[in-house]
Image (cartoon, rainbow, N blue to C red; front, side):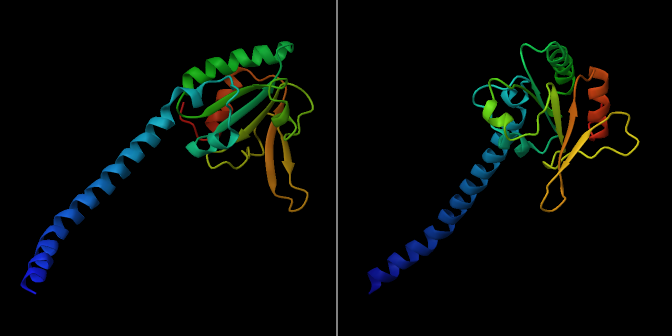
Length: 178
């Protein structure tokens, strides 16, 4: 009986330090996880303009940043001019918005999920993943797409070339400090 009491006392005395160690480990791993998310947020690959074969559309919206998706083609001269403008803008706003250029021939499966009638076509999303809604007097023409079932605004697009200055104007309207 006395031995059982000693074991209980040892357990009671050891439990508090063990609990403290456990709490410190949980906090340490939580902080490390947050640091990893922050490192992931600034990782170059998500901010590289040209989409690669491991492109994940859902991953882009994880970062809570405005997203611009541009669909173009290698054989399209306006697409190549737009791609050059996007490269300049992407250098300026890197880390504050996500811009991706996707070749329609490489990302054929993804293209079929969007209403793309011409190239280049650009889609704009707010940081929360919702479609960008420009003000009524915005100087650029956008195509707004709604869901048939609910009428809810689903996509905002622009067809054709945009200059770097115009892209910056749109990003500013989306809340990016320039």
